[in-house]
Image 1: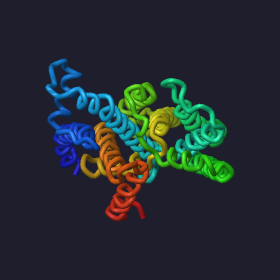
Image 2 (image 1 turned 90 degrees about the horizontal axis):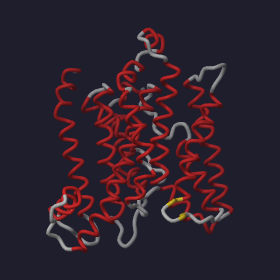
Image 3 (image 1 turned 120 degrees about the vertical axis):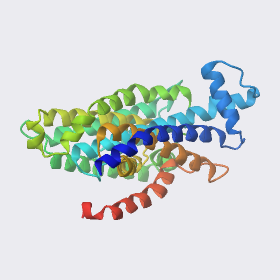
Image 4 (image 1 turned 90 degrees about the vertical axis):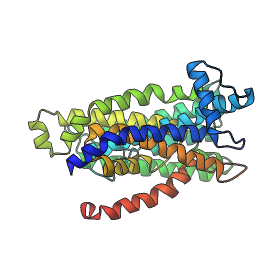
Length: 344
C-alpha cells in the first residue's frame, strides 16, 4: 500500500500544480466582465515576463489589479489553512483536529468584533486595523491556551485541547453578547466572521506572506518529525525527538499560519480539516509528501469556493465561509463514513 502511495505521489504533485494554475486562470477569468482564459494568461505573462499581451487596457486592469490579487490571496489563505490543519492533525495524532482547535478563530473573531463595536477607523491608508486586531487576538488565544494547559513544565495534549475549547466557548459567548447589545454592528460582524475577500489587493499579500511562508516552511522541514510523532511518545523519544519542544514549536507555527489566514479572510472553516484528509487518501500518510500537496489542495479549494462566493448571487456576494461549509461538511461526512472503522 505504501509503494502504491509512493507511486501515485510521483504524478500527483505535478498534476496538482497544473490544477492550481488552472484554478488561478479560471478565477481571474470568471466575473461580471467575462474574460477569455487566454487573455488572462497573456496579461499574467506580460506582467511577469514583460512581453506585449495584446489585450486592451481595461482587461489588463481587471485581471492584474482586481481579480488576480483576490485569487492569489484566496490561494494563500487556503494553502495556509491546509498546511496548518495537517500539522495540527499530526501533532495531536487526531484526524479531527483543525487549525482552530486552540482558539485561533474565536480569538480573532472576538478581537475583530471589539474593533467593529468600538467604531474605530478600520483602515489607516493600507494598514487594516481589523486585520491587525484579528491577528493579535488569534495569537493571544493560542498563547493563553498553552499557558493555561501547562502543568509542572509539561503540556498534556488533552489539557491543551480542553483549554482551547474552553477559551473558544468564552470568546464565542462574548462575541454573541457584543452582537446582541450592538445590533447596528451585527451585520458587519457577521460578514467578517463568515469570511470573504472583498477587500483583496496586492498590498494585502503582506498581511499574510511574512507569517504564513516561514510557518509553512518550518512545518515542511519537520515532515519527518511529524511522521515520527505518529508513533507513541516513548518511541518518538527513543528516536531522538524532543516531543514537548517539537510539539510546541509545530503548534506555534501552525497557529501563526492560521492566524494570518483568519486575519485577512475571516473565519473560513473546513479547509484545514478536509484538505489533509483528501490528500492523505491519494498520496498516503507520509508528511514529507503530504504537506506540499495539502498546500496546493487547500489553495485550489479556496479559489474555487471564492469563485462560487462571488458568482452564485448577483449583485452581491455570498460569504466564502458559507461556500466552504456547504461543500466541506458533506465531503467531511463522506470521509468519516469511508474511514469509520478507523474513527469509531
